[in-house]
Image 1: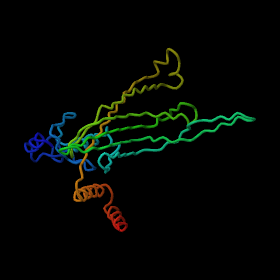
Image 2: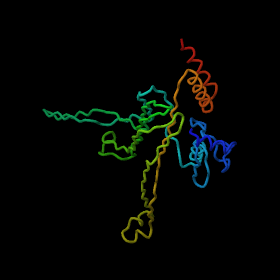
Image 3: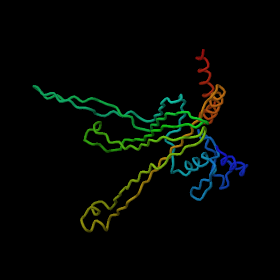
Image 4: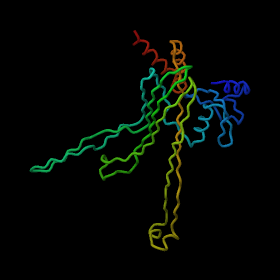
Length: 263
């Protein structure tokens, strides 16, 4: 954080994600989002937030938002890294027809990754400034929609992607937004038989149009690891997060297995 962020934090001592001024509903988001003061006040639906953690926690609590991906990855300077979570869906690729005494058709089965993909290449600069080359893609198979009648051929997928290059200070948050998708859903209901009659059917039926709007936010927080002490500290932080999610006995048992395999 720069001088502005430090001045802001000193002016509001005692105010944090667990004690925000707008009420107790903004609880700390303890699954990977550090509770860092961001330097500016965030207003959302009449409430005030001072940290990224409290904002994300409130968005998830209202039931209208969900987290698609919350992963960590370590990579070297100027080396590409990729995170993917989703499915590998089979579909019919190229088709070869052989003409002879009998027509033979051969189809090749290909696979397509459908899900959330995040590609990042970091470049370290002066004064701990990190240049991030980011490519983010979210895709999903459209239910009950096919280009042809075959259930495995011509699968339709929707895709949202973003590519950018940005400079980010060490341990600072980057928020990418603007990916908004609006879908109109038309519904028609009515009495059996009567609702399908011409002219008078409108009196026994009802039509409605709903609008489904989805906005995607991407939070990225790079951190430079300079020493083995940084590795140990980050490992302990992730161990604490995993312990909160999974039973402590399972985490301890997994760590014992890793230690046995380490020479």
